[in-house]
Length: 135
Image (cartoon, rainbow, N blue to C red; front, side, top):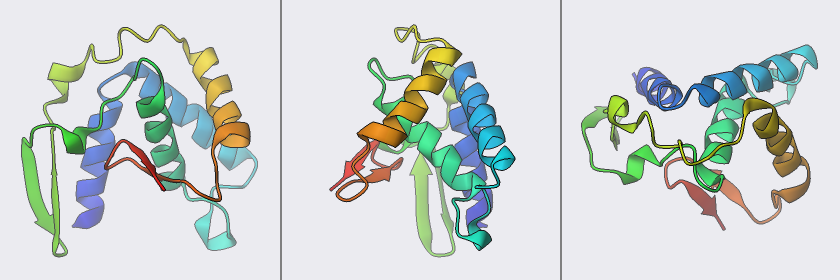
């Protein structure tokens, strides 16, 4: 059941801005073509790449994605004894990232630049739930 709730959350994020779906597809294609999207082989999972994209888009300035878990709760359920709640009326957020004028090619470059040169892997953990880094 938890996987179903997580899938709904990811789908809801993807419906906020068309650039989300586009960036995720490019990153997943890139990872698959390099055979670095198989957790059972010691690489990141496809799910991890999606979370990396969401985090990255939450951190852009201005932000392209909000943190749905920090907004008023419109969806709540318990799955495997875990309380899952967030704002799921994403149609109301369709223009959330409109102030950010970065096109897809700029975002793809910035995504790889961020993860290659800017993210502090020693001290920082991403959190889509908080929309920020955990230190």
